[in-house]
Length: 145
Image (cartoon, rainbow, N blue to C red; front, side, top):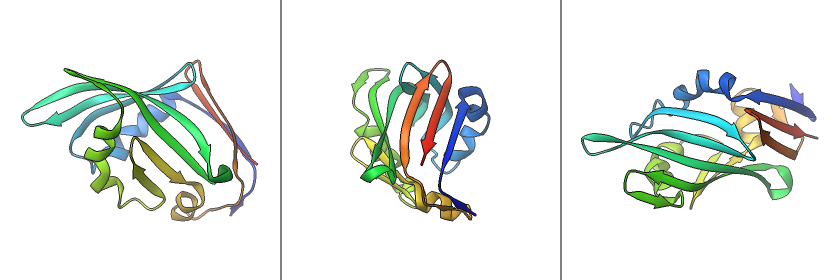
């Protein structure tokens, strides 16, 4: 299958049903949840630091990089117990596990997802580039062209 153009919309409720499986290998993150609100994705859950899990919430902003070949997921406005700041610490904590996922590169406060590599892992050739991203009212719409 070769994917050259596609426009799709996901609701946060549809994505949330399968989202915890993406974090099965990341033992530091428990009860991960997503919601789509006003141009951002809200990522929340519990970070296991020592004995007690610490609730956290991070605002994620999506953007197209490398002429639409890469989707950047930037963690902004992270809040947890006695911490508030950028997403560098969260990405750093997950770096070892995420680093083994083909097509996903953790760097600084962001995950860089190479669309062609993610597609290849699922048996698809993605030749289109990310043209638009819209987030709002519990929906995420991505357009490849």
